[in-house]
Image 1 (cartoon, rainbow, N blue to C red):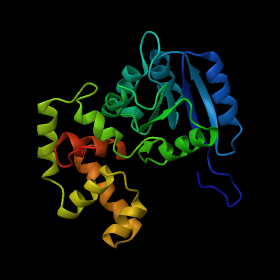
Image 2 (cartoon, one colour):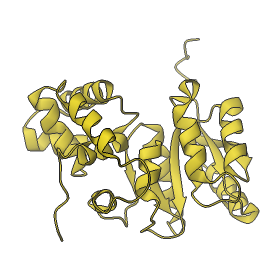
Image 3 (cartoon, rainbow, N blue to C red):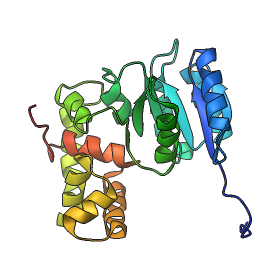
Image 4 (spheres, rainbow, N blue to C red):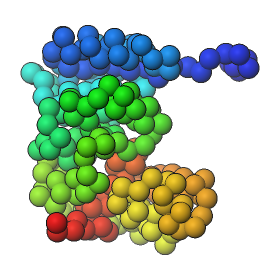
Length: 238
């Protein structure tokens, strides 16, 4: 159905998943106060989050990593593995910026993570960034944080077989697509990459989308994981 000129854009649909009712209530008030987003459901554990993702089809799930029963990591894997939920983006909420499950969360299919101590505007921005399909690192996190976790072997899924599979897929990329992938893994935005390569942001976006398609990546966060797990990019020693 075509939108009329005066019709407002469809708000971003948000699902909240946290075992703390008080926290969910606070997030709901914050999200519902914004004109461009709304809460479509609240889940108290990962199993309920997955089921509600299937019924409510949110654009973004704010998912607590640690919950009793089915935790946020397992729920994210379920969401990412479900073809019908391919457009659902998961933002992991962590108690601490440096969390041992961050790399595992990204491998599981999360679009990024945010500390629970983030400012309200940071949380709202996280929802918008994830809904747009971009990778999310909280403003307080350094650009090399994901690389650090991957270098330490943090989380599950970092197997030699997985790395070899990524290397094989990389062969399908053009030289420019590989170059763009390296810069994405360095934490650069499309605009920053465009300036670096002296091309338009639209050209960069095209390269990113083609790399995602060839590598089977859901979003930019998955591109970062693939870049490091394949060895295309190696973390620098601090």
